[in-house]
Image (cartoon, rainbow, N blue to C red; front, side, top):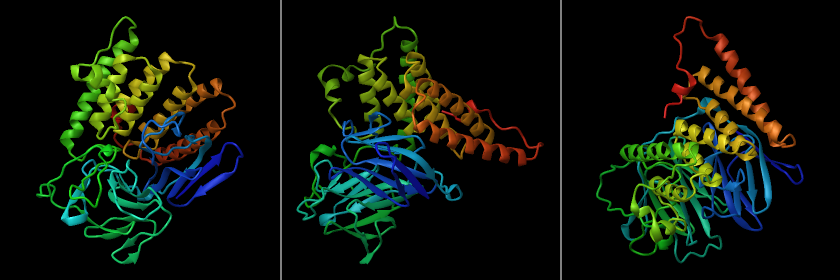
Length: 415
C-alpha cells in the first residue's frame, strides 16, 4: 500500500508506505494511516481551523483519502497523486464495533466510541496530566477496517506488554501499553452492559488521567456504535433534507429549525462548541443552514457529513442542488466528481453500479476541465477513473450472460 502526495509549489513527490504525521512549522496538523482497502486522513487540530484545509474547506476530523484530494497545511499545499491499496484484504466496516475501554488511574476506565486523541493538550479527548512528554499529542485510538488501532504520534515506538510494538498496532483485549510514561490497559470486546459506569464530557472539560473522574471523549468521526442511535441520526438527516431541498429550489420559501432550542443565544453557542456526536454535528449544521440555507460552505459541510455517515443517497441530492445553485463553482463540481469516484470504488456495490458511478465521475470531471482547464489534479483523477473503468468492464465481460441482473445504480446505493 502506497500513498503519493505531490507538493504543488515544487512538484516533489512524497511517497508514504505507512502511517505518517503531517507537520508544518513544527506543528502537528494531520495524520495519515493505511488500513485494509483504504487510506484515512485524521485532523489533529480543532475543527474549523483555517490552518488545515481539505479540498479548500476546513478539514474534517476524519475522511477516506481519494485521488485528486487537496490538503493545505497552513500554506503548504499537497495533492493526492495516487492511492495504492490492497483490495483483496478489504474488511467491510461494521456499524457495531466491539467495545473498547481504557483503564486509567485508580481502576477508573473510559469507554471509547469515537476517534480519541491522547496527550497533554487541553483539546485531547484523554488528557494525560503531569507528563514530561514535550509533545502535546501522544497517541490516537481509532476504529478502522474492523479493528481498534493505536497510533503513536511522536515518531517513537509503542511499548505493549513490555515489548516494542512499532508505531501502530491493532489492539487486543488486555493489552497494556505505555504512553508518555503511563500504563494504559485496553479492554476490547467486553460485555457492553457491564457496570463500568461511564459518562461523556465535552473535550473542553480538560479531563486528566491522574484525577479520579478520568473520563473523556473525542470529536465524533464515525457513527456511535448503537444501531438505534444510527437510525435516529439517519431519520433526522433525512428530515433535514426533506425540509431543506424545497427551500433551495424555491427562493420564496423559508427554512426554519423545527426546535426552538436551536435558535437564540443557545443556537449561536453551537458555532463555538466542538461537536461530540453525529447528532450534535447535525444539530449544528441545521442551525447554521436555518439562517442561511443557500450558503455554499454549509451545504458542502452537510454533504460531507452525509457522506461520512454512509448516507450516499442524501449526499447526492445535496450535491446536485449545489451544482444547480453554483453551476460554475469548480470546488462543487470536483466534490461531485469525487463522490461518484468513491461510489465506484465501493466494493459493496454491484459491478454494473460501480461502472455507472465511474461514468458519472468521468462526465463530472469533463465539466470541471471546462471550468478549470489548468487544474493539475484533474489529470490524476482522470487516470484513476479510466483505469477503474477498464478493470470493471473486463470483470463484467468475464461474467456469464445468464447471471441474474443486478440492481440499478440508484437503488444499489440505498440510503
